[in-house]
Amino acid sequence: MYTMGLDFGSTASKGVVLKDGKEIVCTAIITSGTGTSGPERVKEKLLTESNLLESDMEAVVVTGYGRMTYQGAKKQISELSCHAKGVHFLVPDVGTVIDIGGQDIKALLLDKNGNLSNFVMNDKCAAGTGRFLDVMAGVLETEVSMLGEISMMSKSPVNISSTCTVFAESEVISHLSAGVNKEDIIAGIHISVAGRVAALAKRVGIKDKVVMVGGVAKNIGVVKAMEDALGKNIEVPKLAQLTGALGAALFAFEALNK
Amino acid sequence: MTTIDNLISELEHVAENPREAVADYLSKTGSKAVGVAPVYTPEELVHAAGMLPVGIWGGQNVTLDLAKQYFPAFCNSVVFTCMELALKGTYNQLSAAIIPGMDDTLICLGQNWKAAIKDIPFITLVYPQNRKLSAGVKYLVSELENVKKELEKVCGKEISEEAIFNSIDIYNEHRKTMREFVELAAKHPNSINNVQRSHIIKSAYFMLKEEHTQKVKLINDELKKLPEEKYDGHKIITTGFILDSKEILEIMESNALRIVGDDIAHETRQFRTDVPRKENALLSIATQWSEIEGCSFAYDPFRIRGKMVAKLAKDRDAEGVVFALLKFCDTEEYDAPILLDDIHDAGLKAVTIEIDQESGSIEQIRTRLQTFAEML
Image 1 (tube, rainbow over the protein chains, first blue to last red):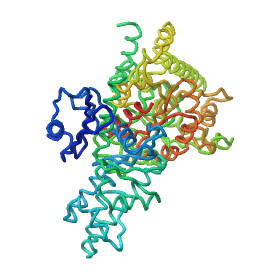
Image 2: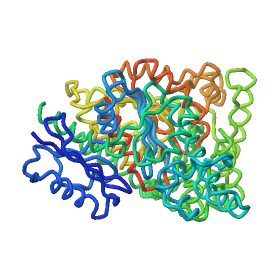
Image 3: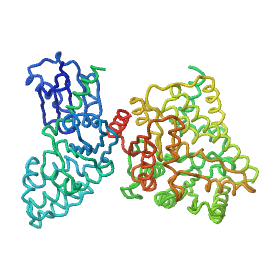
Image 4: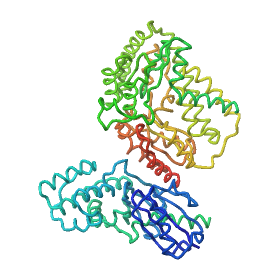
């Protein structure tokens, strides 16, 4: 029995095909989010790569920012519930999940059975999100995917405000203008992101194990800065960007078996 | 339509068309209307003067333009939209406005109003935070004397002691009726949905209280005829400053979250505490302020609001609490940590949503409420 989970975020579309609620058959990520061709392309990619037909999918559940507008799913479920479900599948002893996506930061507290017991989200502000890093990478003329690696070379990170993306951008320009090394500026940006996210996560409670997911979890610099800010080791699953889609596929399987 | 549907529809129309309701009052009576700003105002004095007290609590999806000259960016949207609507002439039916200085932002609203809105006189009123001391009550009486004098200038006649006591009785009867309504609505969650509940409460801001009481009593009578109902969803309590956005209330509906009680300043906090009978009318009104409990704007060293909300949730068999936190309202924000701790300690789940009247973007609120419903 195959189920599909789709996660249409603000900057990327992700999908997972699951067999019998246990085996991950196929995953796909398209770096175009809701409102673009991303949602259709990720579905096509999943079917092509898995050699399955849409009719083979017993149930499809959709999540993410674009979940309300997608018509081809059995059900839509919030991304927070899906991330909790997906992370618990990959890391059964997870306590706290931190998800930094394109425009949202979420911290989830799970009980011992993997149920979501509390959560917090950022307010409507880009500071600390993936978008914040995109803006900073643009100012620094660097690929966002390179930020983590570059920051690891820093010896003396600068101080960057974590209050506002626009203010932080002007601070970065000031540092560049003053001739500060890029690696120190990037490390400072990561510390700034970590400070903001850690403050949010502490509001919901930090419980071992701490797992980080979402696109920003691929940035080793942010993960290290988060570990420093929380004083805890952080586990990043291999499928960190796909836990929402995985959770959706698991919910689809559960819906069939209810 | 049934009787109850007709009554609800009538009040919903008033809540959605306040200007029409006020215009109707003015043309029928030839009297005047006076704006009453958040959080508490001595509406009884306006009523006793033969004028209509009109609630001014901002508005949804108001584009801010002129008000930006008067407030910094980090200012709550109720105050911002109140100022914007006043500057744009939306409140031009009002002959005066009572703006109580209950926190720093409201003090600024009064001061800015005085400076900018010349054709709607500002009536100041400062509530003492040492409200339980006899000196605090005495001070509030002196403030109310000033409000009374200012209102007498507007209506052109003296406001008698007898008229104030009569208005107090009318308002207490309204409070009692509204308390009964919210209890009956909780027992009939399939008959009164979130939007209807909100509209019925909100319509009181644009009608004479005796007329509103009469309509709500009829709704109550109809509800009493119905058997108690079981709701096939999640019963919740709301707390916060204001939660009258139809879009947000409908998101709750679509996620099967039904409001069965509230601790919202714009809603139940307005009718939770009666004005007690004292030796004179102004002392009676002033004493009410010392008896208000569980409100972020009324100093409480014991911080019992969270416990009150938790008790209400237990009494109404609610599973969780939605905290509608008015963005940039520091008075409400200071309450948040203790409030949420007390709610969690009572074994209830809670979610915070951020209320911003200026913004039409509600997707993040949708995600929070949907997740909350899934969590329940």
